[in-house]
Length: 362
Image 1: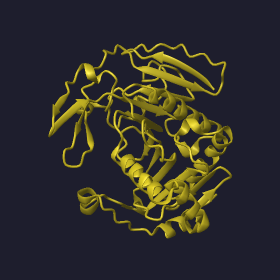
Image 2: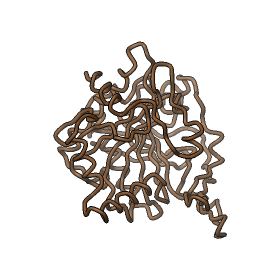
Image 3: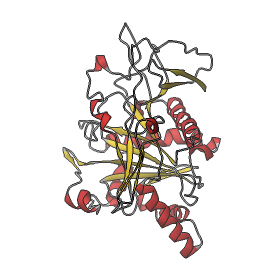
Image 4: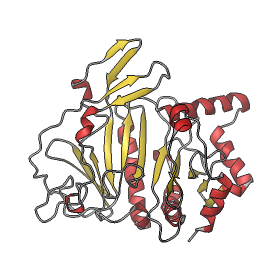
């Protein structure tokens, strides 16, 4: 892999990841861009104790542009985009409309009142472009290309975790207009948070309780239990296992675990990295076949859970892949009990979902 770091016209960082180590990336960004000031801030909810990000400057971000104005396609034929090169393998760059930014402290004051506790939204938000092909998808990548994306995720996790204000690195993909995606080009994002996210905090709390009660790790025991009764196991390799969780929240939800507990992507071994692309592409293909060939591509969220620092020693790296589509033409909306009380009701039994996902294997 060859990594080339450069700057866009407004000072944001852009990084090319190429399979060809001989490739030269020297195309400059010729757009007349002014440096952008981030007004991101985080505010603590005094009732729940959660940090909420406020980023009002994001209202002006690009929203469903036509294909010939896509900012994630390469710059071609005089049309300048976020990627100056005429072609690329994988690209990562700082979001032009970030929810969190390293310079937020220079523009947003902090507050120390007990019920109005606020901080600048210091962190980083990056966009990960998986391919230069506008109409492609992650599921259509080759295993070599998917491995390059994994290497990019790993590299960014290592670099962002080293930033002084970052507590947690979150790599994820939103796919489909039903999810709320505003750019059709295949891409994901990476958030470097200055706090531990609420969901991760709950996981750590449960894992710490399990350790205190049993002396064992929660995630290791969970994987052992699913393999012992594989009714919810969807696919398994030598180094990874994919299963529908016993108490799945979403109609179709799969968790992908390395069989050896590690804290984050940087701790994976070469054999684990080599096996991941084929298994993950298999899962994405199954998601797209769930509702038949005539159905539109399945909307999904793919979310990497990694241990924060400091703390989170009991957390295990894993990927959660889920769709809000529950059947043909019907979506799972987060209505009263889910949005109002965070109490999920699933319309599809986890065992039935696992069976269906096994049926649509290639």
